[in-house]
View 1: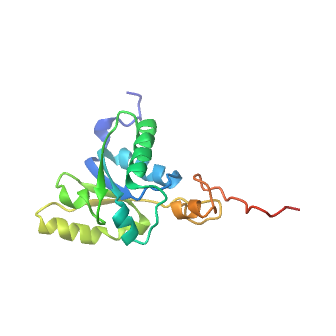
View 2 (view 1 turned 45 degrees about the vertical axis):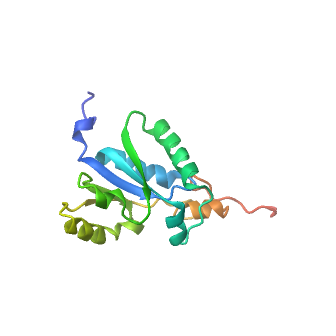
View 3 (view 1 turned 90 degrees about the vertical axis):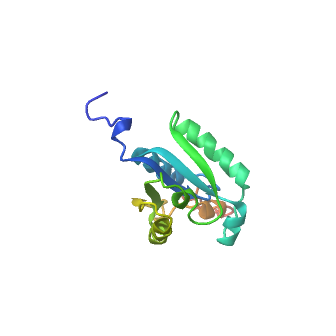
Amino acid sequence: MIPGERGPDSRKYRRVATGGTFDILHRGHVSLLEKSFEVGDEVVIGVTSDEFARKMGKKPEHSYEERVKKLEDLLRRRFPGRRYAIAKLYDYFGPGIASPEVQALVASEETAGRLELANKLRRERGFPPLDLVVVDLLMAEDAKPISSTRIRKGEIDEEGRVLRTHGRKGI
């Protein structure tokens, strides 16, 4: 091992959980996954079901099956050889609550607030509490968060670059 390089044994947790809709994969999703694999030997990735996405007021462009396929393609490309499991989410908590082996939740600031309720549910099951690893939201060029919704609306691309409106001519 190269001096200063972190080996797999230096990861903080054996198993972590993260989640999302993963509709249009973008730089923010990659950041969330990078942090998850940085701190965990194995990552359990919850992907919202189509039904749950609708309950949350989201309108995914792609079906659950399509979203999982694209996510798996990304995982094979970006994190070859790493251990992960994908779980279908029917509510906010999924495998982070149901599995005592999960030790930490990796989440953005906007979803980190659910940790208190997650730990309450885990206590009720006799599971140890989850640690929280917060990943900062990534901002687009216009200093607003990168999101699938904004990409779908044509405001930004997957990297967070602002897209110029069509039909307007510059000076």
